[in-house]
Image 1: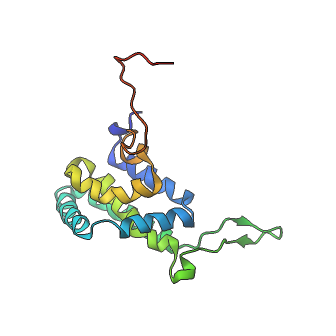
Image 2: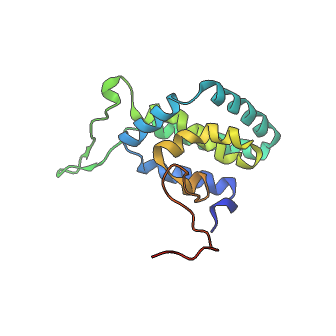
Image 3: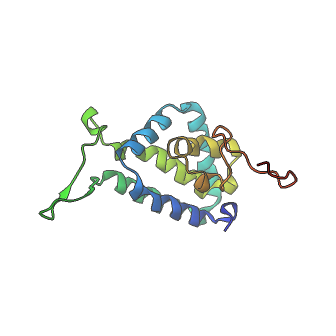
Length: 167
């Protein structure tokens, strides 16, 4: 399936399915990229996304449900397995030692990405990018946010079907 043809619901399902795979390092990167993004650009994108969501009441409930699920995920402790006695064990969270939880610190970036994915077809591309860039920069999941297009800075180049490959 071409990722560009996905419905907003499918994109949100893919985002929420990715949450359990995020460890403390990915969460810390998400927070760092989100905190390092332009707050004015992000606030402008939020305001426009709110306007778009108001114009699409059918999506508002889905957005709210996904955002609630993300916040609940951010509040859960991250367990990594069980000990030989069947008890869960938890790796030290590097952000927790600095006074917070990596998961809870990543929540704003993930909520922004969910908002952008839910309203992608209603947002200006610049507003979509402002909301989703921290996810793309930290996690690098182009299939989720770009429909599989390579990141121009990644060194990947799309093959031109008119040019035969060189060996």
